[in-house]
Image 1 (spheres, each protein chain N blue to C red):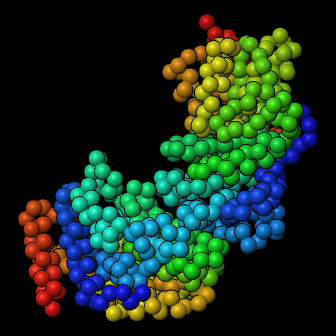
Image 2 (cartoon, rainbow over the protein chains, first blue to last red):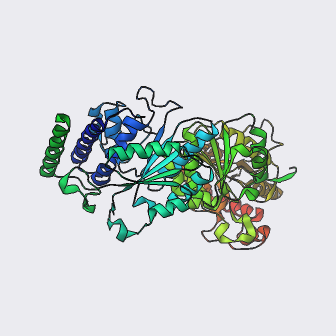
Image 3 (cartoon, each protein chain N blue to C red):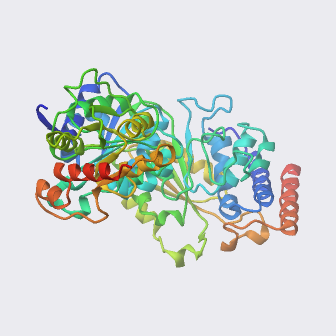
Length: 281
Length: 315
């Protein structure tokens, strides 16, 4: 923990955003919106918080991560590549029949992935299983999972939370990427889930609400979660869908749409400018 | 034929008996441990038993997570909820990543009896068989169930196994050189006129049918097909070539189960008449188990009738 400065994290997250947009553009398909919204959290996990080793990706003592919102492969794969699990060039194979970078997060071919996901609501249960295994096997590792705020309409999410609370899985930390949008529109309209904090609290979780784009807040939340004993932690991270690309921000239509060439050039220019700004600081 | 024991009972005993030998074995249940017979394990090894409540979808997912950490989870609930309610969790969280989870469905088929159609799962073979790479087992008696349970502990990958509610007579314990192997059917009785390929508790009925047919000078071979997938192609092909007619019998809808598996295979390699015996695409209903089975024609007499029909179809 505490391996990176905020500036370093911001640089890695911006590089990851560039790669995410590039992957979706090259594949002419994929999910940019929710990938961009969770990238500051995911970058913090892999570069700062989690104990993982790209040279030993199956280390039984490693921390684990499950991308429960499995369509956010354009967030997951770039972060793993930048962290050194595989070459960045492999990202060009995203969603291609001649490669293994499948459209939703996949564990058997993509080095560093701990669980295959894609069907919403399922990843969180597998993360609970990993945390339970940590207790059974008397290991000290922690398990993290990112859920979408649309995803928590799935009943299985609440089944998983009841189990995490029952087994006092204080090694389990779920982050809800609260970007407020899902495919059909505003989460508040499609299926209201507020008050999320009270819901998770009543399910026996320790709840922390943060700005999901503020690295100090993200780091502090993970540090707080690690001190909580006897119950799981849920971090409600307020984020902006499409974060970092002006025309994608807070637009449901960018949930699963690829940019055209012009849009891609604009996005890349914006992210490049931001990267330059960060590096000049 | 010997003593009677329900396969769920034998499975419950097997879990306890094998627990020391296989320390990675963990057992999950969804509030049915008394019925699924995991309660013995729960009592003997409480630190390795997890009651996940009435939340089957979560149970399968948690098991998947446990499997990624080197444990050998067996999930338990009724067949209806294992294969039915949590089908997609079994497909996407267990089978797609190829994780070592054993999905156990108790109370399969119409012999659930009084509880009626909502609990009489007659679709589990079809549902589980349709998932790429899934192994599907349905042992017929206590000794076979004990052997199958240990075989599953030594098999690395996803599998589904059905357990039955009713006590059934032992038929495999007297078979010479009996050896349980996943994917290998067992010939319980040789015959030359027709082959009855049976699974689960229909094996005992097939043996009775074969005895009745013998009285009419019809020689029926009986195969205990404890593994529905992967199908033992060798034993099926041999049966087709040597007896020229096949009857399949299962406590399952005739759509998509054992009969379908046999037909799909044999039609392309050695087309002989195959007559399917099972539930004729209708829901079950409440009643005492033997009465329900009788009402739906799951009887030795009906198997014998189908055998004669298959023989009549021979050219």
